[in-house]
Image 1 (cartoon, helix red, strand yellow):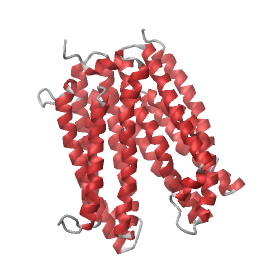
Image 2 (tube, helix red, strand yellow):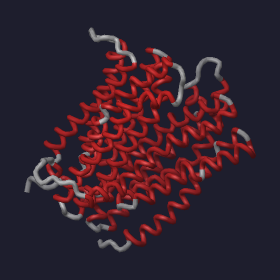
Image 3 (tube, rainbow, N blue to C red):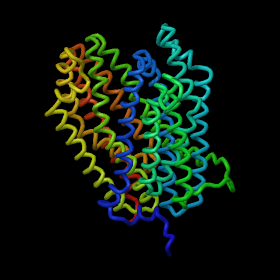
Image 4 (cartoon, rainbow, N blue to C red):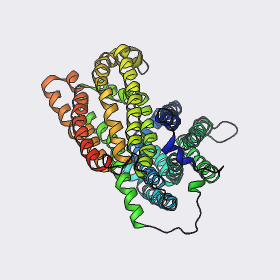
Length: 455
């Protein structure tokens, strides 16, 4: 039988080969996504400092858009993987179709924002007419054409669910590289095109997303036969939608918590001056290059655990967790070493001449916060297992504790007791508390869902 299902390798390949095979392409594509966000900001800043400020003000809406799209995508990935593991290919296909429908509904919400609420949103943050006009232009374009983002993520998750992470990586890379190439051309009016400014940056973004969407569709239809889409037999299935949302909505909330955390932490840090706020921003940019590979690893873990959980292969579920934990802890250990040993060099990447205060505060912050990295590796991996087996609410509890419920009160209290340098300890404290909660939840999940599985 030449046409053996590709997804079967999720249930047969040794874990020390399968986990990197599935996860590494996702890790690479997520690193590229982090890089292109920085490059995007550089081009906008060179066009006009006001444009950079406007894009920064719009960023929370973009983060919410990405959070909803990727959260729903995680729900789609988890459900498809479980159905394939249970040998129910038709139900897996229905999950994919209903997943696309849900993603289009999510996109429609942002179309409304783009068409009717962009100017209102900008007016909430600034009275400056220039900033409001720039931000309204950018926001209206990226929201109104958000279907490219939502649907492209759907196809990426469909390919990941069957183990085709290399194709998923190609889709993301093509979209990101297209954005990077078009940015200077459309912003500055190169190659005979008109100078579009901030609108050019927005169009570069959505063109990259739409191209990724079309490429994702073509690759899925040609290379992913288990989930080849047709309209024949499609129906909106309330049960499937509920199953996707059960994992997808908690994932979306988790992905959006970071932006809420950033805003509220800034309210605490602003009392210590602009440099303290800048250090937090720099930290989040630096840590993305440590955490993004681990998040990519966790995305790759979802179909592996989901498939083998659906197939009731207990040893393979545990084996996947073990290999993923080793990789995640190794990555975080390297990140911890970098933050501990070379914080001056890392902070210097963002320091302007004479801004020694940034490095002075940042060195202490990076060394203190990085204490929690290895703890985070364990928490993120176990949280991913919760998502893969359909217990997305456990992951939500974890994320809320890590980033809001424990961290913010700890930061506020430490600011009163020990000043600025004490605030950074709120990160390790929150990570330790949330890990304890995570281990208790995993014990419950293991007893109720994993231990009863067969061999």
